[in-house]
Every structure is written in structure tokens, then in C-alpha cells.
Amino acid sequence: MGRLRYGMITSLDGYARDASGSFEWATPDDDLHAFVNDHERGVRTYVYGRGLWETMRYWQDPPAGDLTAPEHREFAALWQEIDKIIVSSTLSPPTEPRAELWPTLDLDRLATLVRESPTDVSIGGPTLAAAALEAGLVDEITAYVMPHIAGGGLPWLPSGLTTGLSLREQRAFRGGAVALIYDVSKG
Image (cartoon, rainbow, N blue to C red; front, side, top):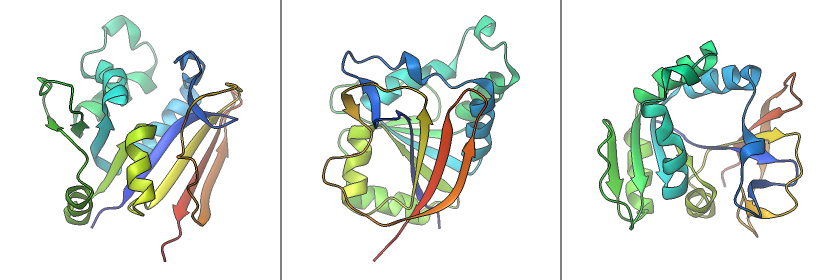
């Protein structure tokens, strides 16, 4: 049985994108990228909202000149081997391999997917993840906190969400980012 994980790069003040929609400040350095790669090895399925899918599909066929760091090449290889479910009522079915479209997020279907998965499932995108968080389906929350204050924008956690957490791992990186991995208290 898998677990449902939600992780997001966030500003110190809790935003995945700033008020202008930018997330250029969220680019991980090689040290953080290597940590993310290690953390993602236990995932075999990504569930993305439309916005995150449009950002992450870059990794399907990135220009070779962009993959100068070994961490980038490794992440591209990992990402290409993971199944992707894109939840969107506005996108056409994806042409990328290992990708399928769900027109809406069916929480029962998601719970079944996680329960029947031999590995962890990752849900991504603050809007999509909010529904899974509010339904109590998320088992792990990871904040990759960047040394940046966005001052507003798209929050990475839904307003009003309350749940107990247990810190499982923390790590600081040379560039000033911090990873905080929490298990969600159930019950």
C-alpha cells in the first residue's frame, strides 16, 4: 500500500507563486535538486493539476544544453519513468508517454489509486492538493522552503486547514533553502 505525499517549493511566507504568478525564485540549486531526486525515488505516480503539469512537462524532453548538472539529468530520467495523472477539465489528453487525463479529481478514485499502489503517490499543485489535504488523504507533507518572501500570491496550503504533523526529517542546503518532511497525524 502506498502513501499519498504532497511536496512543494514554497517561499518563507508560504506561497508557491508570487502575486505576479512568478516562481522564478523557486528554482532549486543543485544541492536541493539532489535531495529532491533522492526523495522522489519512492514515487511511481504523480498526480498533477493543470498548472503544475504545464511546468513539469518540460522534463519529458528538456534541451540537452539545459541538463548541464548531473542532478538535472538524473531528475529528467526519474520523471520520464514515473506515471503521470493530470487532473484538468480544460486540457486535451496528453500525448506524452506514461500520462493520462482525469477530467476532475475523484477523491475516491485517488484513495483507491494510493491504496492499491505498491509505491508512494505524489500529488502536486496547491489547488489540487488542497482537496486531498482537506479530505484527509495526504500522509506526508514536504515543504522545500526557499530563502525568499513572496509577499502574496498562490498559497501552497489551503486556508483554514488544520492537522497535526510529526517532523520526520529536516535539512538545510548551501543556498539557504530548508527541507521539512512531516508525517500527517491521522485520527
